[in-house]
Length: 300
Image (cartoon, rainbow, N blue to C red; front, side, top):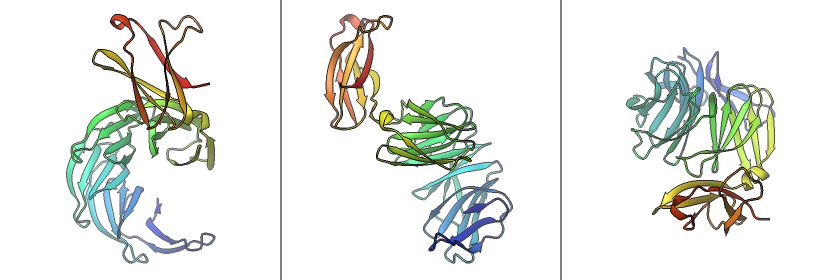
């Protein structure tokens, strides 16, 4: 755990009822933010840079390496020998940490005032304060490319669970996004999560366990949110291509209408049972790309 006054503290929690402090790091001058353990080392965002602790002796953690970014390091993620540091002033900094005693800066991305980052497979999800959620392709891990964006409002933290991104927004807001397609995130839900800037989420079945701010643990029933379909529209060989995502095994209906002004004017286009996470329907019926509106819903 990090402490705003003493740096890194290591606790023995073999008995959760009575945690014992084993050791405290020395040589830390700034505040510690996010941190991550990998092997015998702990990587931490220490206010002005990246700090790496050797914790082979948990009673005597030692600062083994440091890189002075000179900004305001807030978030951190370590993947495959690389440390990605969300620095609120300079953007996203990328370090080679295969030698923990001598981290080397190998890349940079101009993320806007990032506060937190999470990496899932080859995709980085960045809470970029006033710019909301930024989604980066890490196919080339030292040269991130922006592939998706959503204006959530002031994004201070991001947690990904399954195919959903939970973004902590401002003072107490939580935005829930469907990220089946990282290039086109879709807002599927909102909640009041309490006052705070950090969020922790675990999905179990149709429930999301959310810890953030001063409201402790909240349990959100996401049944309606998770089962509701998400419809994305693109083009395939001159025809509308409709991508339906939702819960595998549920039945959905895709419908169209020539206008939204009249209630009850929806016509069924296709009924699908999702056998995988995304299913595509090609609409070959509209003449000369006539105007159509589409929707997907749970089958009655």
